[in-house]
Image (cartoon, rainbow, N blue to C red; front, side):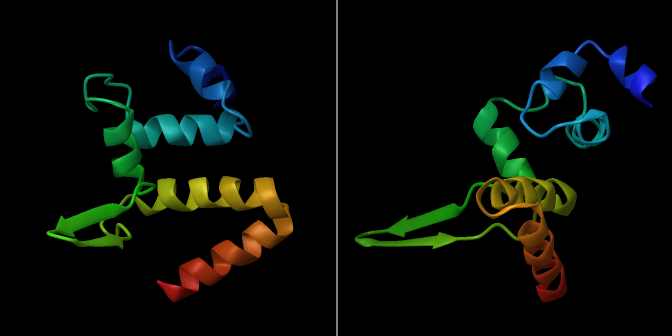
Length: 103
């Protein structure tokens, strides 16, 4: 897999991300695809992965909601990296297990 992924023109970009090895980088590339025109900007890519909240405002009221219609594999991977950077890998795995059981 490493040999095939290394041939991809964007392999260096994905591997330059902190915490990305060959397996995670190739999986992320597979989830997003290699068509650069698919997402208009970084915000659209973030929305697809489920990392940005939905803000609904009406008059003086504003509500922030979580995205439920999202790519679960990208969301859980990003959540793991976020928690592992602060609390360590063991606590991140436990937090992911709780998130997956919760639904």
